[in-house]
Image (cartoon, helix red, strand yellow):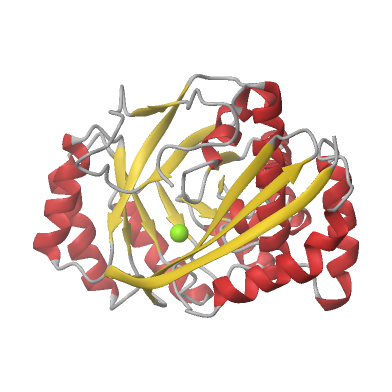
Length: 348
Ligand SMILES: [Mg+2]
């Protein structure tokens, strides 16, 4: 089988209901869709999402079309790691992290989708699954919501059967965080998981001060307390806090996780399928983490559920609230695995 053609398409529009975290408004819905065609008639597709910056989808599409695609034509699509190695060499001069890796990830996901479709099985079967359902929590506590709004979405998440909720923190003083977290705790009860996410907003001293306060409220983890690339900061923070540190959504490639995991700087590793490099890198990161007894929870959901099915250390798939017309319901706080061939997900 040979790759014959790669199609790339772009959409970008304002988000109908913008949301805010500690460092940004997420105000756009952008998508770059990649379709890889073969001489066998089998195709594989992926979709890469952008939550802000109008120009980002078009820049990524240009990178994929003009730089990555010419290197793929004629290749055997089953050589997924071989293609990854070639694309990393190709992009090395400009810096493989950042948009280059997001482009390589888009190709990687389309190749896995193609492989699943060629064999007629979902990708979690190719990776070697450990479980048939994935525990989930709902990321509902955006900062533009007032306390009443937080209480409403948290109650909705529990009605829908999620095991817990996550709320954003760090948008104001600690006293405001504590008021918001305490309100959510009253709604979800003592036994549900409650996570807090600072989106890289703090320096070391503030992360330590606030982390101790969140721990006192019974939070499950503190997410992105520090700038994402501050490996030593995370290691030092983890030594001081009992509360688990979760991070990883803004790291690029498997190698970017090695020292963080080996140094004990993360208790729950959270790769993002786009930025980490796709199914291949996320699976490798998960296995690396498993070797150090570090838990794995995806950043976002969608196609990531295939990786989560195949890791021994999976604890959670991240989700938003289920839409009113959701095709699935949660059972025991878990998503079922998709059964269609390829890399389809539930909650893209
Ligand atoms: Mg986060």
